[in-house]
Image 1 (cartoon, rainbow, N blue to C red):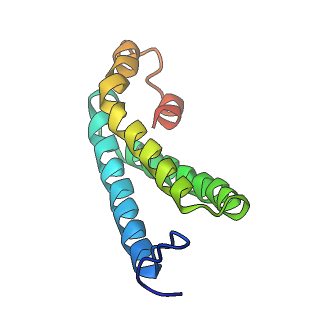
Image 2 (cartoon, one colour):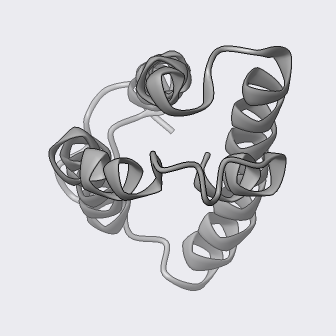
Length: 121
């Protein structure tokens, strides 16, 4: 396999995927830090909030790796990978636009319990 782009099969080469994994990993880390800032006005910045954020992100990564591996084995298509990555990025970018609406309704303290922190992280 050539490390350069091969126009016949659309393969970008190994170097592209190293950069891709680096960028997506950095994006997940940035999302984790942003989640703590986003939840802070509603649940604070205690250790349990951080533990729930980290746990939920690790759970989401594990489920995503499992489902993504199944999809990649069934449909080994590079454009599908890029389209799914774009959709995930747009979804994460939209969170600040509508997420505050959910937390504003919870600010009355009805669900201000560790269970709600786990579910909403």
